[in-house]
Length: 274
Image 1 (spheres, rainbow, N blue to C red):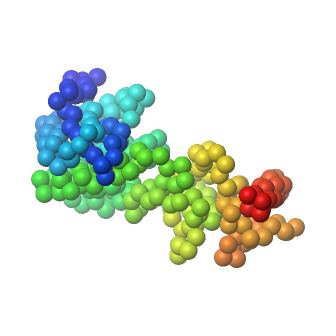
Image 2 (cartoon, helix red, strand yellow):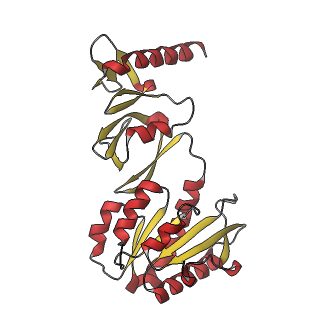
Image 3 (cartoon, rainbow, N blue to C red):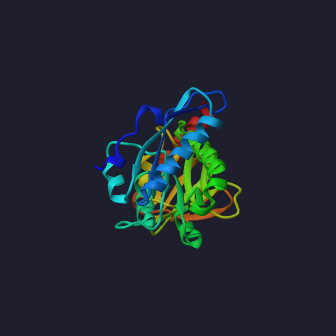
């Protein structure tokens, strides 16, 4: 681990408060192979936080990393809430690192920082929270940082009744009781929300979604490609299909049919007698 990569001293701590409520510490990391720029960015972040975010909670610049490889060495031991990430670096690129964060740390608020303005279009596939231009950093950083801190605080709050999605439009929170069903499509999930005109698309799998559901949730798998909200189920007959709210017909696999029937009967009993 290089000297640049060491945990910063106590003078890197500043404070924030959101809506008068104390929030857990926010960890910010910077990954850029231009070492002097990384240091300047760190100082700018501390100065903005000190000026604008006065409160009882701490914001910690947890590391300045000259490469994606060095940052990854810290992941088993350290949670990063906000990451300022250069794109073009020796070795692993910022885009490659962003892909890893999408998979391993989806709640990290990602801000690309680049001297190549045309990279903004390529960056959209990673749904960054912001794209900052190095040449315009003094103009863009303040608002971007304040918004990123607000988002990071929001993401650290318990979300047992909400599904967090990272989409091309940014981070979206959807109440679980508003979801009708989810469909698996290659490495993506399509989330169908009650009343929405089109599904939300995000990277993920049905298996991971089901494993992260809170205890007692109303979701059940009906097919290798579908998970439904049992509260939105309108009809389950003897055929190989179920009917969801909105008269949406979905296939039900033979191996899941009995489980779905049992879950639906339990839901009906609880609804009638509770």
